[in-house]
Image 1 (tube, rainbow, N blue to C red):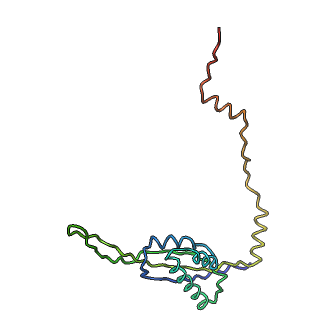
Image 2: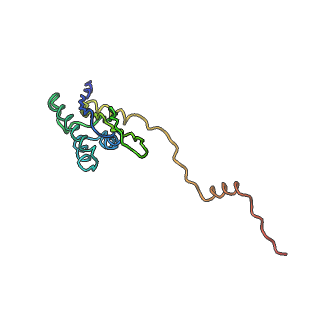
Image 3: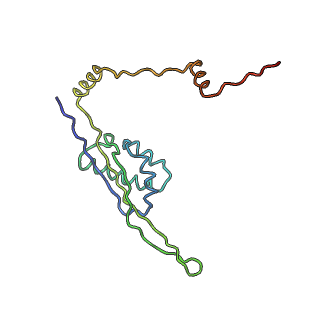
Length: 168
């Protein structure tokens, strides 16, 4: 019996990016779980500033995979992307009557983690397929359709009967 090879993982990180982490997370959610070519297409057509930074980090991770592990770009997918908050630069601005308004210039650390798509041996896949076919299907009762009579019975029990008017 052959074993499934554990997928190799590669990551790239951009630190101290002058952007709010909240804004960068919006774009990072779009590429999580996608293949690398698909993630590049999504980032190319995203009109947010964070898309450009994420594109650079993705390219760096792909280059790391090709240079260090010899993994082709087509075999990779985005396993995880996360954006952590970095240090906050605090500035101030003069306001009326000698007061001060604080300005927070936020930074973030963007991490993209790529993994190789797991490829199982053909013998294992066929054995798993046979096991699935041989296993009995779970028994489940089919959903019952409501008939007109059944729905009338339910409504009749909830509402009081209407009084019939008699003419004398």
